[in-house]
Length: 426
Ligand SMILES: Cc1cc2nc3c(=O)[nH]c(=O)nc-3n(C[C@H](O)[C@H](O)[C@H](O)COP(=O)(O)OP(=O)(O)OC[C@H]3O[C@@H](n4cnc5c(N)ncnc54)[C@H](O)[C@@H]3O)c2cc1C
Image (cartoon, rainbow, N blue to C red):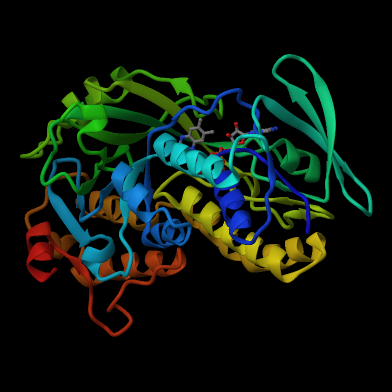
């Protein structure tokens, strides 16, 4: 049986470990932070992500910490509705789309792993992997511990799930051109408040030529408060910031951009002002890689395919990586052969998503409306953006990420002009 090391206890590394356990392989995990804490804000788990969580036997536990997505509604920067679609099972998919706090999801995977492994003996926290060396029999990892100790450890093969700033990717692809800043920074916050609408809606607001805002609830009765925890993200052009998930920002930069947005059920400016915390995250372009494998070492998750964190695809694609790599390790005795088969199955489809996420995906409909109306309010949205045109954009996107819209292939559109209409048809 292959002795596997996983670098990184983010969602990618943890789900890979859970998948390997299902194959009867117990890996060893090295994580640089000394203590795992529920960091981050919201992630939008698509139907194909929920399917993976169900296969891990964690659907009920996941439901307890997340919110069912029912409606997805698009507005221009006057708060006029331009499109709506149902989500997950409400659209006819077999699985739910759910909103969750990234840190709580990570802790669910971590706690489950500790339970299924029978302890933390093989989860080494506070151990940063700085480089690898390999020969025909195995891989040597060089570790730096938080207390300053250094150590080398030996494993048959290594899966590097060490995130956007992966040291292993850097070593594997030293000549890659430097990643570069897109010019857009995300302001990411959470706010505690009464549920808006029915507590199950994602809102997409604004003129993307100026700024774009996404809002959705990620927990009901958060920590016994009786309130919803609302996740919001605002994209805004500003000077470059550092690519780090934990930089603190100020809402003063972005609140004035939403002066014109008037929604009957939510004061978006108050939502931003009342935030518990605001983080900055610049959208950095990492070029898609031409190879994820070096002998007995392989990349997975953000280390392999860092993408703009829009629409939950970063985390959901890491779940798919995890399933496929575990399957391939089950099929091949030689870990290198397994890694090559995983690379062949996953790299090109994910690279297509990486490139697509650099564009606006289906969010482009707000730009189209803004351009076609010269940034003015409209009288009849059908004259600005016909429903059939919008539907085609959405269907193309859903196909790309591997979840074609139910019914659409048979010619039945599943998008709606307004959420009233969407509710009537659901
Ligand atoms: C603190 C944090 C907050 C985040 N918040 C959000 C969010 O709000 N929304 C969102 O969409 N995405 C967020 N992400 C990214 C999201 O988790 C990933 O896009 C996705 O889940 C894929 O996960 P991953 O495991 O590949 O990478 P990550 O989640 O980045 O996990 C990588 C892990 O590897 C560890 N690591 C890094 N280098 C080394 C090393 N050299 N040796 C050992 N361990 C190492 C890191 O500490 C981390 O735990 C966040 C990531 C982090 C680290």
